[in-house]
Length: 394
Image (cartoon, one colour):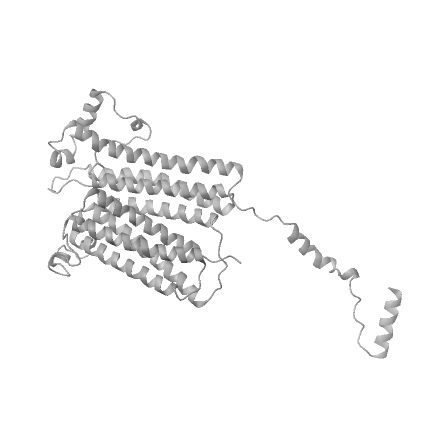
């Protein structure tokens, strides 16, 4: 060090620049620079959730899909108003004796659906619709247990990352809210309406809210499960890929909106008017499209307008899916992503065929239930494609 100081002093006396500092021994960085590097190397990386978490969420999404399909069948068979009480635990035990069945039937006879629509119903016929609604409610309870119990297990084992904990809590809260919303919907069909001579039915607004929350729960569970299980593709971020991703997101939103509009069709029995295609009767635009005042009421309360809107949304969804498929052909995509795009178009073709057949055949229950299931299949395939195209985090 003394020699280096003397050499530096000589350079300064001669008027030259100071000599460069000696390089660190053995090519190491100075201690002040080494410390952050050591801290970064020693920092524990967050562990990825085990695959069992992703599989659990996929099972949950399948359970929600089953509840949606069973709820659709319950609505198609007009069974949703057969159980006039709601108890979380008490109603889990069905009637067993003849006296218990007669007591349940007498409670049903006090409400508008029996007085106006089913006044000549027999006890065996009542048992059928009662068991339909009972099956739907019990399935909903199984869905709740399928979310809450494994969530508590994975939470206790430390299998959930911090962001995933928040998402799981939101899913569990939504499934509980879904049960309360279901009873709120049923309650609307049990209310006396002295000024109305229409067939007793649940509010189409509450039905749409009930279905919409179920679709949100299903989509969030499926998306999270796919994100945890499917490895991400490292696709080059080109302008074409960015546009394809945007188109896929917009198409998925349109599919979701079309499925949601089906709740208004079911709530108003709008599938039983204008059973022709592509025209509605003899016209492309029916005369009673805007029969209600104010005009905004027609969108949600006029059966003709509700069916017309559902047709337009369905055609728009099919057109958007076809355009998405054609645009994707211009972009080099991995095999799995290509399969998702092709599957989306195939499911869309089947769904359009089911919808038209259901309309032309005056809404037979098996075909209508298959059409409702097809909307879930279409939404699922769109979510799969979105998962394939998602960005790789840097």
